[in-house]
Image (cartoon, rainbow, N blue to C red; front, side, top):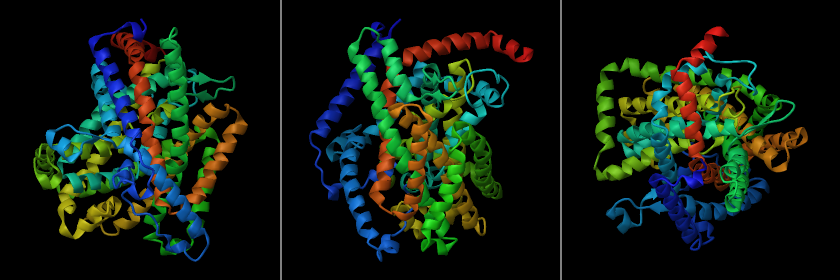
Length: 562
């Protein structure tokens, strides 16, 4: 049955909500003023990694390039101001927020509404299929003969490499510093809900993926937005046109995000961290940029297969380094663990004005989780569309593990370290919290327990940045191919452009340009969530059919026979 013919009450509520959101967007756009000086202070919140200070422009003042850089920065400042006013449009939830003109940022609320709806619509598949997801990742049901380019495990690590990064180190520290321990409770809840968003979007990516004669896969939101809406609404020209517009919009936003937020920003921020331990790089930043471009290039030139082979080794290693460091601190302070979890629970419902009250803590937690795991953004769907499987739901279940590993496991580790060491409320670190220097705050917290931790952190930061770049290069390349044709020539032209931006990221410290990339990534959620909502009935049908076969033991018999 087509979605447009199945007008249940909950469907009508969702439709009404979509209309309301669109009205708010148009009303807000009509009042936009293009003034660079009014770029909102909250714009840096759009990044999952904005808490590391960018390199200073003094290194370029001796050259004419500094003027060019400032011009670029000013242009992007104007653009960012307009975009941020839409994405961070405050939706008030309380009377106090109405009076202050404050509220939950529109983009964050959009992600939370989508995640909550998907979780209820899919009957908590994020919890029901957890054990099955682990068995899938371990390869129990792998079939090398299935169509696709990578295994379940490789697809998961490729997606994780794009999300597990400085946000897990810096973002959590800022969340705890500004919202108290209770912010972690809401981050964990957002991570649980986000598991279903990942499930839904990655299932759709498998359903509507396109496989070329040479075996290359084209999949992700740009495909299920254009093809899915056309299939679900065959007699509706408006929905057909809407699908094409949303697909192009997503692709453009993804390309912008991949070149700036998933590329130059990563080089820029990792350079700043490494330069603290290798000061000579402050004067020879181009060396770092060229070196990083070389190592990124030798991987991305081979496409998703090469990227997956790299991420399946790098991701477990880099996560292992960081988790072991956190575990060491936790084990040394086991007696503080019960009080730490108690602080998280009590703080989640804290009415303390110092942390913005209950709603303030909730907003901080959900916001940081959204920028940490990218659930609902649609980026991971591009990686998971390339997985070898004949059952789309199966890959969706694998994808649901992403937010669990990223937010519930790794982010919780950081939170416990921050609470155990009391770094989040230590007066000597107030300037770090106020300056959104989360990586430095985490480094100080860990250094108080582990000597020379700054060297360990530098290694972790480089690996996080490197893995993020190689995965985002694939996301951008697939969207580039969607717009300009899926040919080897088109793919190569994008990869060359991507490597140019790697070097550029080590030279340019234009803050607004880097924030632009993060806003692009956040903006991907608008067309993606809308599309997944409209196609949620298709996902539910696929899930019900697959789950019935799974519970009957059919797949167990197939596994044993193979």
